[in-house]
Length: 284
Image (cartoon, rainbow, N blue to C red; front, side, top):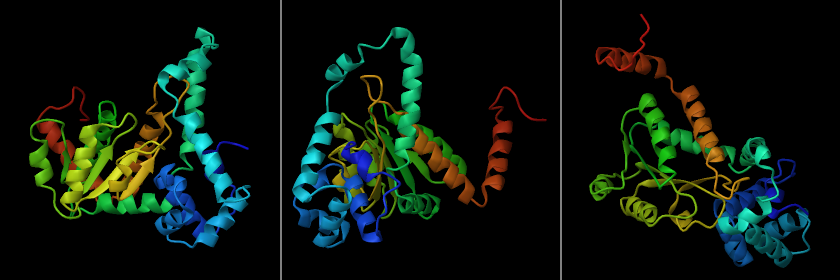
């Protein structure tokens, strides 16, 4: 049997709407939601216990206990440390690493497609295009690259987009959050304390937290209103950001197609940039 997460994200699964709710609940807090009592998973997914029983049998398990055993096995495989991951890759010829890594990245992007429900994407796009609410972004030591990359594009698409920097002004920025403002929070293992503080501060201000994270049990998941998960394991012992970046660029593409006044906005921005001689080469 394939790893459990691969099994439940198989696009070929013939699932009922209720069963899809269970899959979404599992992915939203993977693997945490599947490790507790069946009743808790049912409550989180908004379905009945029999729905979960039917789903685990459809997945090939005799019951919920066997399903949880597979979940624990899958989690054990995926939570190995970078030091442990060095050994299995030692057989690779140094000349093979470049091509092997790129091929593995392609596989991960295909895998990423199954991790996000279309409805989640629709909700996120609607939130970000609603200019009545401000958008803030925050990232960790490496994931801040993603937070700034998305923010720079959002500033082209709409007003009211700000960075939450990890500095002395961070509490001031958090205080300015208004109800229903959006905080885009990027945090992948090894989860950072400051990211948890930002999420907690945002929720205390009644802002909405969109968490971009990995597929594991991030402590921030319980604070998130929407979760976008990406695989991070790669052919390298260090985590990859390739799938997460692909998700960010896919989001930018969705936003661009839905932004009705984008052409006028970009024309105005370019006119101001020309006045400031922003670029070395300008269209005449």
